[in-house]
Image (cartoon, rainbow, N blue to C red; front, side, top):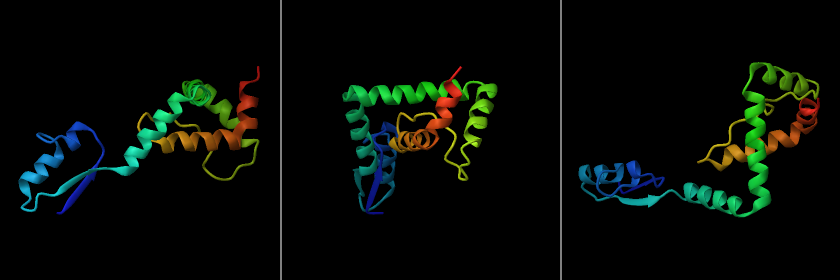
Length: 126
């Protein structure tokens, strides 16, 4: 092994007890450790979103919407009844919890809400 790449968690990147240190102990080549660029990009995107109040509010609202819909089997069924009326044929219909560590989960939720907005509005109307 000549190199290794992982996120910045101490159990992976720790120079004394992390996985990178253990691999260096076992390897004769002293492999280079590099922080994963995809993870760095994810952290940059999350910090950028937090610094823009409108974006932060949108994602807070998405998470609250997820909690309301998925917090009860009855509400989950009601939401899916609203979505079934849209006639969508693929799997991008159910909201997901917003991951604190993966930007992709936020992106998927935005696409789902964009596609299912009429169903979301129908679900929220009294």
